[in-house]
Length: 134
Image (tube, rainbow, N blue to C red; front, side, top):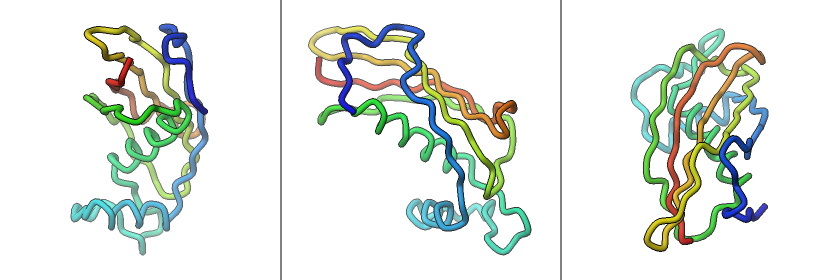
């Protein structure tokens, strides 16, 4: 989906996805980033998911929903985690526009991010900023 970024108004929800992190998806993330923390123990009864895996996989859905143009830079993010996610947990990942402005030929889009587990327990919140050609 390609968005008309000029039409993104503050308060608009631009992404709302359900995500279930299975063992293969989490193992792929751990391998791809070389995570050596041992948070993810695939042989455990309910393996924990590395927090940044939740953030990365959730943000991937947001970026897909926005259809960001070539040349976009993910310029910053602030994230806070308030709970543990386990393999198999159903997550709801949402993003809402908090800024949309143009300066010096670049568009700045700020997003509020939220990930809930079980439909009612926020386990991640934060902000992300994208800079793209205007």
